[in-house]
Length: 477
Image 1 (cartoon, rainbow, N blue to C red):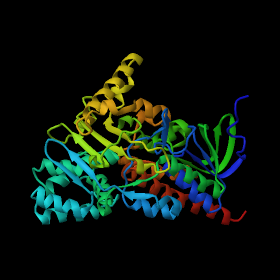
Image 2 (cartoon, one colour; image 1 turned 45 degrees about the vertical axis):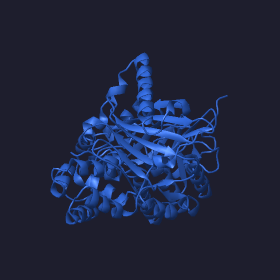
Image 3 (tube, helix red, strand yellow; image 1 turned 120 degrees about the vertical axis):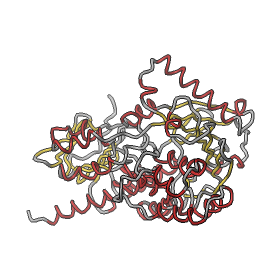
Image 4 (spheres, rainbow, N blue to C red; image 1 turned 180 degrees about the horizontal axis):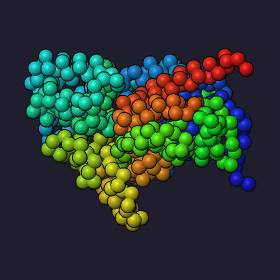
């Protein structure tokens, strides 16, 4: 008989969380800690969403994506998870840029960037300070008409080199473009600028294992391989979810799934106001990515002068269209040294990531698709060879992921890596106004800046749900 992955699930819960990305995990943990009965349903066989990993022969372990986040991650993990997790977050000391306009290494914080901009780029101190102060003062409810390009033109007119330095990493971090509202760039940038870029040292598999242990400590029921087919609504209120031919009742649902999938697939547009449906249909998904995972042979070492993060490009100027093109000119390399996984085998690995469009990969035949993946691998290895000489002979295992890969494993529409564009935030926040007890948490709008953004949005939604449940419990029968 096939395994019943819902065998230990009860028939009713206070909260059902759909999806175990970092936002879903965080909401489940907070609500479980507050004493609510919580069920976490994950369609994959592993927790973590895009914050996950995979193993390959030879003892190789790869993190999905490249994980760099602001210092605020330490505080959020300490407060909403535990010290075991927050104590393992460390700063990346060498963020490196190599492109036709400049070559440099930075600790990626305000002090170092100020020095670089004033000394190496010869920008006036007042312009640098004014730019940083403006970005720092931005809030998600501010003016949305000013674009990121206009922000740069205000402080650094005609300085394409400065735009590249300040913009390229954030485009990787959350998919921002020069045409997007300036606040979608400024808030994320200023978060990183506070103290630099950080990473979880120990590997994603260690992080998720510690999170799962904390969830169980807080009595959260976890069921993997359990894709939700339907969120049932009655009289404008969440009633239950359908999964594996079971109907499980609940007072609240928090979807950590794709925003559009939640509205149109799991709930159904007939349950929402027509004006809301129109607003939701206009929400744009963010771009996807391609990645190449390269593990070195036993005994092969990579000098740490290569950096922790390496932003490379052969394009003469920074342009969003160039970053998304199938003709790849820009790659971000993340170097994983043995200290990244101190408990494992002494292995070195490199992961390359490039922004990508779903439509460039979705329509390929199987033979075309495999050929395109192989071309991606070959060109990426060739690009890395400039920084790690003879790397082709040093590689023990290599494979590629595409937007189709991310769509398959995460069910994100169009393989979107960063949820939706900015307009998705308002739609996400309005869900409980449309249907009582229905919430969404994840990578949307301005809160789409990777791990920290996902966790913090999970915190916001968990507090909303907790208040609702407390009011229901206090209401007279």
